[in-house]
Amino acid sequence: MKTRSLLAAATALLITTACTPGGSTDTAVAPAGQDVSGTVEFWHFFTGREAKSIEDAVAAFKATHPKIEVKITAGQDDTKMLQAISAGKGPDVGLSYSTDIVGKFCASAAWRDLKPYVERDKVDLGQFPDTVRSYTEYRGKRCAMPFLADVYGLYFNKKLLADAGYTTPPKTMAELADMAKKLTKRAPDGTIEVAGFVPLLNFYENVPSHMAPVWNAQWLTAEEKSAIGGDAQWQEMLKWHKDLVDWFGHDNLTKFTSGLGDEWSADNAFQQGKVAIAVDGEYRVAFLREQAPNVEFGTAPLPVPDGQQERYGAGYVTGNIAGISANAKNPEAAWELVRYLTTNTDSIVSLSNAIKNVPSTRDALKSDKLEADPHFKTFLDIFAHPKTATTPPNASGPKYVELTQEFVNAYLGGSHPDLKQGLADLDTRINQALELGR
Image (cartoon, rainbow, N blue to C red; front, side, top):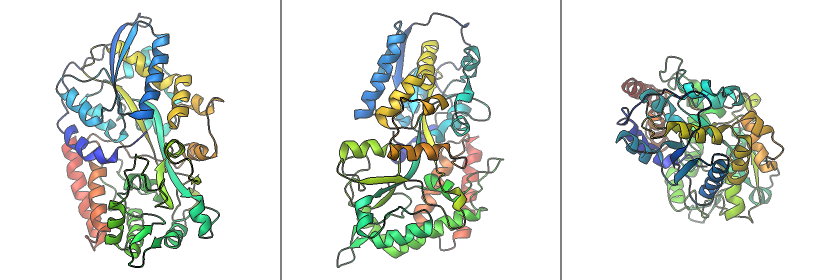
């Protein structure tokens, strides 16, 4: 599973124009017990090995629902799906990689309100952990169901750490800074050959949204205004990263990262031994086993700021979400597919085992069929931690996250010498975007 952060900007541009989806938004449902049949068009974003796992899950669904035919289209990201829905086309069922746009999906009615289906079929929403429920609805409107979860933690190269005299990963940000320096290897001209840790907040999965919960940095107020400028934890977080960026040299880091392999390929920098410690999701376990089986690695929770040791073990959680398009041609059959994929324990566990994503129901998490070796269990523990958090939904979608990303990139590059004022200005821009999105 991937968050596809590189596509977020394009998605944001489209969701601002996709507020009025094509087709009907009528959510009237048939009486319970109706014999459902017909064709369902299902779009998802997975490719390769992961797409095959989706095909297997749909085959299991069809075995129990022989009157429903499912046409699968893989590799369809949110951008394509939103374009299609806005044009009155698109799938019956869509699978999104971004929980950040749930608010937009719900508020714009691009995805149908699922409450009538949930109530009619007496679906127990209590089977989903609270955080998962929070990122699949907006202001009481449920337009999505959770389809597995992504949890972020730390990966470390055991050999590189051992060569530097370390036997355990860092637990505090101070320890991470010290280890990053000691683990870094440079050429005689200062060029980085191996980075202990890359502190840029736009490198692979090391991004503000994944790191903010570690610092307990808040995004929005209860009134859906930006909380960033008034939250001292944002300043502390960004100063920590800036200090380490300055130690490496921003130009050195930029040169180093520009020469690294694609995140989702076998040339991933951690898999190639070019980065000793990295932030990544639970799915990296499967990628390592497939693409870099000789790398000896470990997993751990993300380090926490000094003085916040009680937060150790928490992290960031997000996940894939499934919904029914506003203009779905066969909404009843679409709901059968969505309900099966998101609530059937055997299906969820099988998919989790195949693509190494965290199950999103309590029964699946407790299943004795769930394959949870020590590497993967790290992420199950993070998922269960009471202080694990996600980005809050809002009607403007991921715009506030993207504006923050733009500011952070500039700040770490040397712009905005007055961090406090820069964050106050960021608040203004975010609040303007939030207001436009309502």
